[in-house]
Image 1 (tube, rainbow, N blue to C red):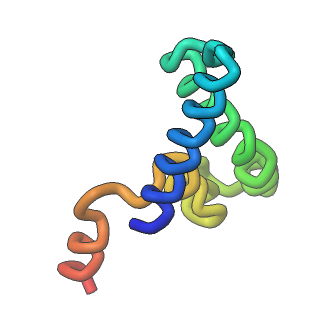
Image 2 (image 1 turned 180 degrees about the vertical axis):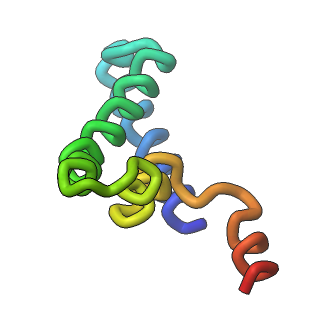
Length: 86
């Protein structure tokens, strides 16, 4: 939870600085979010690709490199599902 609070606080701080400098955000929010998503996916291409080239299935490669958790974050209710299984 602290990570989310720090993230929003950093965003607000940058927004305040932009406002004080009379600067507009460099990209519309949707474009910026899609760019961030692209960065997260791009970070995982090499590790997942290495496993795929070694003959590992795509879903297994994603699990081994924890790519899904990295790109999507901890999904709501996921801890409870794991507790029920374990």
